[in-house]
Image (tube, rainbow, N blue to C red; front, side, top):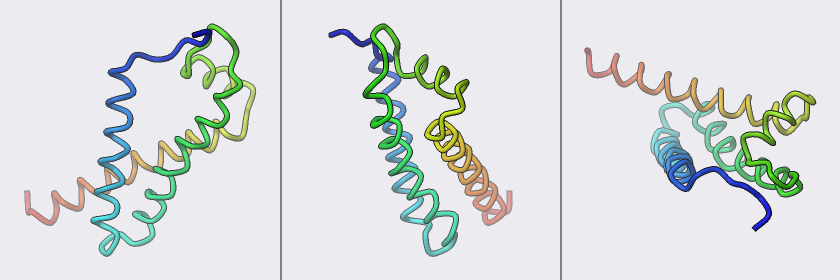
Amino acid sequence: MYWETLPDWFWIIYYLFLLLTLIVAIYRIKLMKISSALTIIFVVTVPIVGLINSIGRGIGLNEYEFFTIELQKGSIWTIYSILGYLFILVWWIKFFFQNKRKNGN
């Protein structure tokens, strides 16, 4: 194989995180309608956009190295990915604070 890739443990954690996010967002869609719907959209589209654009990366570059190079160039897909990951992070923070407030802790 010509291309380098990140370790298997990274991909397992990454996809488990996305799967968990997708399941929780679907479960919470009635309570957090707009933000959960956007989270579902980002969880599905960000990995697809990243995969499609990483297909043409150079030999000897792993996904992270290629992403940072493309981000420095100002590629639209990397900006979309960053915004998507930030939205997912904010959604998780909002989710935990709502649950904490709901439980009264």
